[in-house]
Every structure is written in structure tokens, then in C-alpha cells.
Length: 295
Image (cartoon, rainbow, N blue to C red; front, side, top):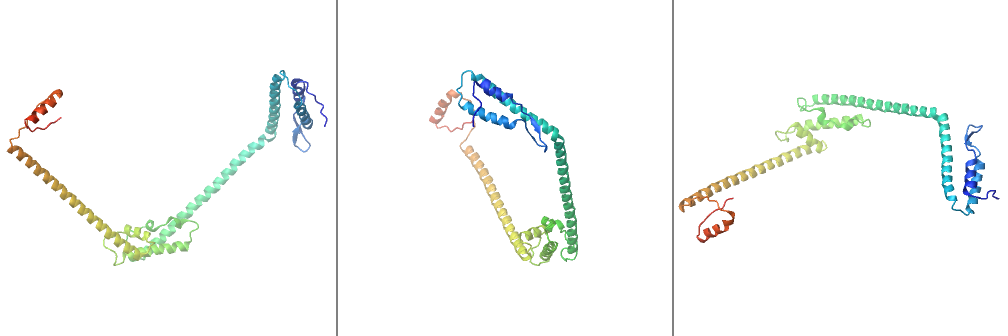
């Protein structure tokens, strides 16, 4: 393809042609937009680029190259601004409606989720009250539980309130727990003095198996008694040691006083200058004089 451009200078050929074409938005019949003179402008740029490749630059072109850069930036900015302005005119209201619609839809979803959660809470409360009522009925009809202070919360499991929890399965678990507690309370194997809390706590750890729980309770009580006895013996030994130390101290004090009395020990306090201390000690040592120093 022949090139109609021959570079005279960057200013006269490149800059002049790049800045001379009118670019703007053109509305098509189908409602779309495109740039005016786009194809011609694109062809001109390609041909100018080819001509530039063969051009020998001069010192005078340096300033014009900077001007060309500014001109290109201006063209790009004008196109972007015009597109933005046209979008604002065409789609400004649409964008506002879109934002408003998003907020409304978001609010609608929040209301739906909140309503669902509130309904779930109501269902859970109803289910809890129903299970508590069944608990009271079972308790009333179990010999060893009727007059006990056992509460529903002692056997309750939060997962029972889940929507996926089978009502029959929950009833089975509740009845098993109540029956286990009743059986343990009425067992002759249960050690004396065991309270309700210990029974429930142990049954939970043994998967509500009554016999295992009784065995575990007995082992726990035995172990606790051994621990208490070991603690009592330890304290007794420590007390005996303390009394022995006190007795030894008293004996030592009596011996000290007796010794001082027998040898005629007399307390004499005198002050010595630091510089004379070594000479005084030497004098006392040479004469076999016993002494004690206090600071």
C-alpha cells in the first residue's frame, strides 16, 4: 500500500494531521454510537506510523514530540469525557434506578431471611416447650423421679431443636435418659450421699448406661476418699514436722541460753570506724575472744 505521507517534521506532518481531524460521537440508526471519521483517522495514524519509521529525527523535533504527547492525551481525554457525558445523559436515570432497585431487593432478601430466622426461633421455642411438657409427664410417672429436683435442662440436648431432628428419635433419647436416671436413683448399688448432679454428669459420660454409671460413681467416690485420706495424712505429717521444728528451735534457744549462762557470756556493743575494723578483728582473734558482728 502506497503511503501519501512524507514526514517533513514532527510538527508539520505528524502533529498537524493528528490534531486536525474532528472526532466525536455519532448516533447510528440502530441506536448505537461510534466515533466520527474513525476509519479514516485510523488509516491516517497507520500511515503516519509507517512514515515515522523511515524519518530521520532532528534536534528541533524534541519539543514538538512533547507537544505531540500532550495533544494525544488531550484527544483521548476529550473522547472519554464525551462518552462519559453521553452515558450520564442516556444512563444516569437508569443507574439511579439500578441502585434503588438493588437496595430494595437487598432489603427484601433481609426481610425474608429475618422472617425465616424468627420463625425458626418460634418453632424451637414451641418444640422446647413440648419436650419440657413430655419430660414433666415422664417424671411424674417414674417412681424415683416424682419428688426429685431433676430439671428438664439437666437432660436437654440443644440438637433436639434442630429442624432435621426426628421427633421419634428425640422422644426415644429423652425416655432413655429419664429411665436411666430413675433406675440409678432406685438402685441398691448406688453409694450413699450421691446427689442428682453427680448422677446426671456421670450418665452423660457413660452414654446414659445405668450400670456403667453406678460403677463409675463408685470408683469416683472411692478414688475421692483415697485422695482425701492421702491429703489428710500429708497435712498430718506436715503438722508433725512443723511441731518438731518448733520444739527443736525451743531446745536450741534453751541450749544457747544455758551455754551463755555457763560461760558467763556478756553482750557488749561498740562502734568501730570502717578503717579500724580489720585491726580490731585481728586484736580480738589474737586474744581468743569470741564475738559476733552486726551491721
